[in-house]
Image (cartoon, rainbow, N blue to C red):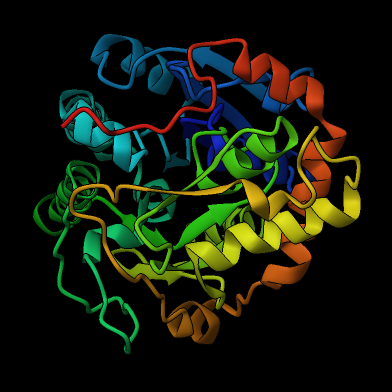
Amino acid sequence: MRIIVTGGAGFIGSAVLRHLMSNTEHEVINIDKLTYAGNLESLADIAAHPRYHFEQMDICDAVAVASVFAAFKPDAVMHLAAESHVDRSIDGPASFIHTNIVGTYSLLEMAKTYWSELDTEKKHRFRFHHISTDEVYGSLGTTGLFTEQSSYQPNSPYSASKASSDHLVRAWHTTYGLPIVITNCSNNYGPYQFPEKLIPLIILNALQGKPLPIYGKGDQIRDWLYVDDHARALYLCMTEGKAGETYNIGGHNEKTNLEVVKSVCALLDELQPDHPKGVKQYQDLITYVTDRPGHDQRYAIDAGKIAAELGWTPDESFTTGLRKTVQWYLDNQTWCEHIQDGSYQGERLGINV
């Protein structure tokens, strides 16, 4: 099988590519614009692999993307390219609209044109797999879970742009017959995550003795999914999922943000006991900051469908996955330093509203 992966230099995309190179025999081409969160160092281990290819391009560039389809002749597309940070979307929604909505439209049009010219057997096997988020469903109350039938109620520019892209993908299936699969996942964590996200931000700030920012009271609840479990689920959905279906992917790990931060601090106390000057334990660095606008209170995924139909369940608990994650950041300070040499220096994002 030949697979186009968009956004493969990002956090989840790079995990998908490492999974494909390590566990399958497929040939893959990675299309990535290499924005601030795209990092080829995350793919260093597979860069020279004979089944892996990279093209730097914008998915909105229809001519460039068309050339890839024509030359590579894919059997599937895994579409992960997206602007993906809520706080950044509050300050600058335009890039989210452009990439997540216009970019997805452009890619769908190219895939439809390519797919329509395939023979009957290849048409049937082709898949356009759109990777999305549970944030499209909005905020849950104290009980209940998001299912594939949950109504869309996005509350941030980011989640609204992803909801829009989900609707486009579904419409291209219903209207044109394009064989699609949509997946909506809970909060990912693990190695190679850009440090604006909660867990790596807390790890790196703590090691430097910087404040550990907690929005509001830190009582927002998220369902945490280890990124390698997610990559395995995505491959399964693409290869065995039914065309036209949506699959929710969750880690069965509901935690408040404050619980997450305190768990990271406890692991750092154990694994990196040489604290910064003046710090007795890492959680002393916790600082409560003004909550962001439109902050959803709770997300939680019902992953029963993917378990029942495709046999997927997560391998990692939050305890095991978080330990692996903290240890990875401790062992890969060079990667972290290279990331932080750029424009992002561990500041809180999304306050200029």
